[in-house]
Length: 108
Image (cartoon, rainbow, N blue to C red; front, side, top):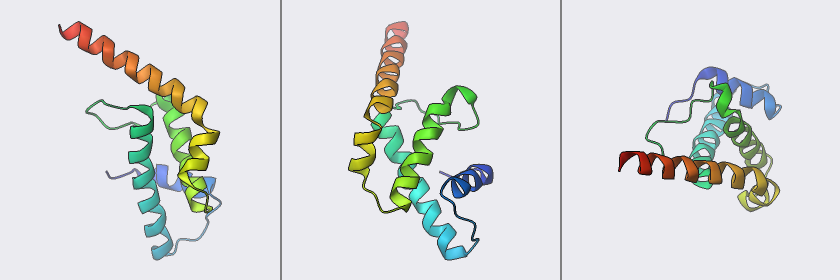
Protein backbone atom coordinates (compact mmCIF):
# COMPACT_ATOMS: atom_id res chain seq x y z
CA UNK A 1 0.00 0.00 0.00
CA UNK A 2 1.36 3.38 -0.99
CA UNK A 3 0.14 6.22 1.18
CA UNK A 4 -0.40 9.73 -0.03
CA UNK A 5 2.28 12.16 1.07
CA UNK A 6 -0.41 14.31 2.72
CA UNK A 7 -1.39 11.45 5.04
CA UNK A 8 2.21 10.74 5.98
CA UNK A 9 2.79 14.44 6.70
CA UNK A 10 -0.38 14.61 8.79
CA UNK A 11 0.69 11.59 10.84
CA UNK A 12 4.20 13.05 11.23
CA UNK A 13 2.71 16.23 12.71
CA UNK A 14 0.32 14.18 14.88
CA UNK A 15 3.34 12.34 16.31
CA UNK A 16 5.28 15.62 16.71
CA UNK A 17 7.90 14.52 14.19
CA UNK A 18 9.48 17.47 12.41
CA UNK A 19 12.68 15.83 11.23
CA UNK A 20 12.91 14.68 7.61
CA UNK A 21 15.70 12.19 8.18
CA UNK A 22 15.35 9.37 5.63
CA UNK A 23 15.88 6.59 8.16
CA UNK A 24 13.32 8.10 10.52
CA UNK A 25 10.76 8.50 7.71
CA UNK A 26 11.37 4.93 6.59
CA UNK A 27 10.68 3.68 10.12
CA UNK A 28 7.53 5.80 10.37
CA UNK A 29 6.27 4.62 6.97
CA UNK A 30 6.75 0.99 8.04
CA UNK A 31 4.77 1.65 11.23
CA UNK A 32 2.01 3.29 9.16
CA UNK A 33 1.86 0.32 6.77
CA UNK A 34 1.67 -2.22 9.59
CA UNK A 35 -0.87 -0.12 11.50
CA UNK A 36 -3.04 0.18 8.40
CA UNK A 37 -3.19 -3.62 8.10
CA UNK A 38 -4.02 -3.87 11.80
CA UNK A 39 -6.83 -1.28 11.57
CA UNK A 40 -8.38 -3.17 8.67
CA UNK A 41 -8.20 -6.41 10.66
CA UNK A 42 -9.46 -4.92 13.95
CA UNK A 43 -12.43 -3.18 12.31
CA UNK A 44 -13.37 -5.97 9.92
CA UNK A 45 -12.73 -3.99 6.74
CA UNK A 46 -13.46 -6.84 4.30
CA UNK A 47 -14.04 -4.71 1.25
CA UNK A 48 -11.77 -5.21 -1.72
CA UNK A 49 -10.93 -1.53 -2.03
CA UNK A 50 -8.47 0.17 0.25
CA UNK A 51 -9.57 2.63 2.91
CA UNK A 52 -9.68 6.10 1.37
CA UNK A 53 -8.48 8.34 4.18
CA UNK A 54 -9.44 11.45 2.23
CA UNK A 55 -13.12 10.39 2.43
CA UNK A 56 -14.67 12.40 5.26
CA UNK A 57 -17.13 9.55 5.93
CA UNK A 58 -14.17 7.36 6.87
CA UNK A 59 -12.70 9.82 9.38
CA UNK A 60 -12.98 7.26 12.20
CA UNK A 61 -10.56 4.94 10.40
CA UNK A 62 -8.08 7.75 9.88
CA UNK A 63 -8.33 8.69 13.53
CA UNK A 64 -7.67 5.11 14.61
CA UNK A 65 -4.73 4.85 12.23
CA UNK A 66 -3.18 8.06 13.54
CA UNK A 67 -3.64 6.97 17.14
CA UNK A 68 -2.25 3.48 16.59
CA UNK A 69 0.82 4.95 14.88
CA UNK A 70 1.21 7.41 17.76
CA UNK A 71 1.02 4.57 20.29
CA UNK A 72 3.60 2.45 18.45
CA UNK A 73 5.88 5.43 17.79
CA UNK A 74 5.89 6.27 21.50
CA UNK A 75 6.66 2.71 22.59
CA UNK A 76 3.19 1.61 23.68
CA UNK A 77 1.83 -1.78 22.75
CA UNK A 78 -1.01 -2.70 20.43
CA UNK A 79 -2.69 -4.30 23.45
CA UNK A 80 -2.76 -0.91 25.19
CA UNK A 81 -4.19 0.69 22.05
CA UNK A 82 -6.87 -2.00 21.73
CA UNK A 83 -7.85 -1.56 25.37
CA UNK A 84 -8.15 2.21 25.07
CA UNK A 85 -9.95 2.21 21.70
CA UNK A 86 -12.09 -0.91 22.12
CA UNK A 87 -15.37 1.02 21.88
CA UNK A 88 -14.38 2.79 18.66
CA UNK A 89 -13.10 -0.44 17.15
CA UNK A 90 -16.21 -2.39 18.20
CA UNK A 91 -18.47 0.25 16.66
CA UNK A 92 -16.67 0.08 13.30
CA UNK A 93 -16.52 -3.73 13.41
CA UNK A 94 -20.29 -3.93 13.98
CA UNK A 95 -20.85 -1.44 11.17
CA UNK A 96 -18.62 -3.41 8.78
CA UNK A 97 -20.20 -6.72 9.77
CA UNK A 98 -23.61 -5.19 9.09
CA UNK A 99 -22.45 -3.81 5.73
CA UNK A 100 -21.01 -7.21 4.79
CA UNK A 101 -24.25 -8.99 5.75
CA UNK A 102 -26.30 -6.50 3.74
CA UNK A 103 -24.05 -6.98 0.69
CA UNK A 104 -24.35 -10.76 0.97
CA UNK A 105 -28.13 -10.57 1.31
CA UNK A 106 -28.40 -8.29 -1.72
CA UNK A 107 -26.38 -10.67 -3.87
CA UNK A 108 -28.62 -13.65 -3.09
